[in-house]
Amino acid sequence: MTSPVPIAADPCIAFGPFRLYVRQRVLLEDGQPLRLGSRAFDILTTLAAAPGVTLTKAELVARVWPDTVVEEANLRVHVAALRKALREGPGRRYIDSVAGRGYSFVATLASPARHEPIPASCPAPPAGPLVGRGDAVAALARLVLGHRLVTLVGSGGVGKSAVALSAVARLSARLPVAYADLAEADGGAAVPAVLARARIGAEPLLLVLDNCEHVADTVAPLAERLLQDWPRLHVLATSREALRAADERVQRLAPLACPPAGAGGAEILAWPAAALFLHRAGLDGTALGSADAAAVADICRRLDGLPLALELAAARTDLFHVRELAARLGEPLRLLKGGRRTAPARHRSLQASLDWSWATLTPAEQALLRRLAAFDGEFGLAAAVRMAAPARTDEVEDLLAALHARSLLVARPGPGGLQCRLLAGVREYAAGLAGLEGGWRYDERQEYRPEACGFVSVYD
Image 1 (cartoon, one colour):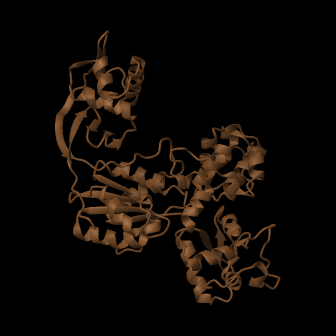
Image 2: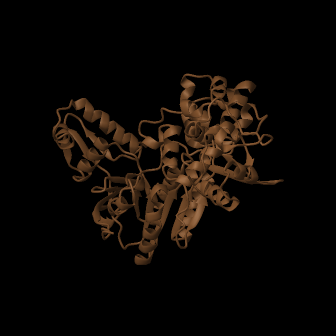
Image 3: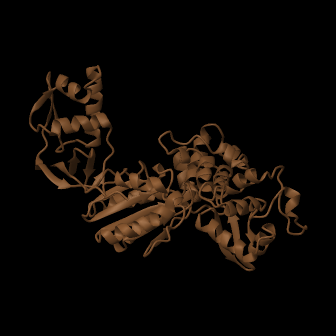
């Protein structure tokens, strides 16, 4: 691995509750990253570099748009956005307008142009409320402070990155942060190059390794070596499965709790899955009729409380009424698409999220998952073994454990033993790959012959 690059000193301009790091293009308010557009950031750094000096509008335009011809109105729009982000008001003024001339930075500097080490740039937490995740964020922050290697594990689309970044924001005032998005690595060999851009240093540091599942075999020994080399380093990883590294602590992130059958009216707002769906759909839960509230509760349950699926479903309410939407969820992969333009490609549809998970499976795990698609609902170990014939029971148990570890199925103890179920969309996805058409279902009352459905041995 290439040697990590030490964290460089960065000029810090401190005023009010803000810390402005020029080179890293980071603005913190009370230790929390503040979202700011690139032009507004350039205006702020230009003005703050010359406190008390009036810069003309022409000078600002020339520095912020050096190769572009823009109207003066553009400057006014971005200055207004900057003032809004800084929450200027009575007794809180940082930028002064000089009539007929330009603008001046008038904030009192707490420590003008001082230098101090800061984290490599880390994405800010998602905008808007993180519905139903307050306890998970707090628990993760505590776990990171108490242990040096923590992995947040959950299924694709459950919100691991959002929870991790929210926890990191809480810790950023106590620990510098370096961030690496390993989704950028197209294989284990590319991990060192992605990690080098995180600018790891020997100082006390929290290193965030986001989206590790497809390179877990590389990341696990790498994390162990980094922790050995840097005694004051903490590592927070997110993955669809645990790294299984030495001294790793795993926090599982479950889907959001869903309203039970029979829940109706405003009471569904007490359930995080429904609250998230209604928030994203822009619907007033207190004004829902009983039939609509029941439809929302049904949507949440059928999507297993998975935040990505709920957000994609909420986006379709501009076309479908909630009752119509609930009726169409028999084919979630066709319906749940068209996510945020700013989201990673794997989060713009449920299909893309499952494509990402499928690529991390071994051939044997893929083969068993295709067979399990025949189950519509829960199934026990004995039924799974019959479905996977001629594989041995211990082989099927190991494969089921792997699919559970990779967050593709859920398991619960039942009166007759362990009961398993594929998560929302997973069954349809695997059924499509297995060629199960026409609503075929497995019936334990009938003799099952793998060759009847074109299946081959798990290990063929």
